Image (tube, rainbow, N blue to C red; front, top):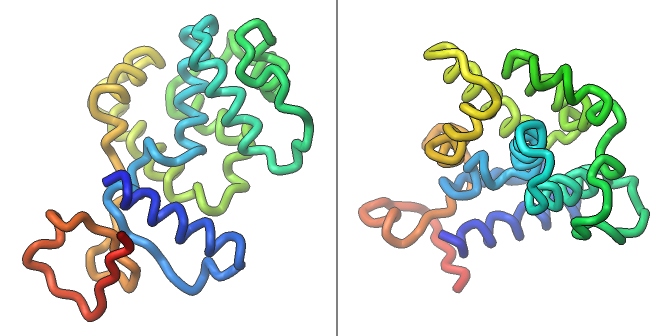
Length: 193
C-alpha cells in the first residue's frame, strides 16, 4: 500500500511540474483517502488546535501545513518545529482572532470558514478532497449533531478511512496492490518495483 501511495504521488508530482495534469488521471484506493490530502490534514489539525491549543505535536503539524499551503512564503522555517515558538505567528490572523467564535460555530459552517481563511478553495488539486470532506461532515451532522471534539473522535475512529469515490469505469490509471488485482484484466500493466 505504501508503495502505491508513492507511485501516485510521483505521478501527480510529475503532472504538476510538467504541466501535463490534464493528460492523465489516477485511481488508487490509498491515494484517494481523505487523510492523505494536505488540505484535509490542515483542516483536521486546525480543528484539533481549537480543542487543544497546547498540543505541541499538532501545533507543529499545523504550522507545517500552513507553510506548505502558502507557496509564496519564502521565509525561513526557523521555529516551525520549535515548541517554544508561538503557533499563532504562523497562522492566518483571521484564524487567530476568531478562535473563540469558531469554537461556537456549527461544524459545517466552521469547515467552510476554515477553508476560506486558509485559502484552500484556491488549490484546484484539493477541491475533490475538500468536497468529500464536507460531504462527510454533512452526513455525520444529519445523523446527529456533533461538536468539534466529537467529530475529531469520529475522524480518528472511522473518518480517516473515508475517501473520494470514483467510478471503476473511468478512463484513468488505476493503482492497485497485487492482492487487489487478482482476477482483474487490463490492456496494460506496469509493475514499478
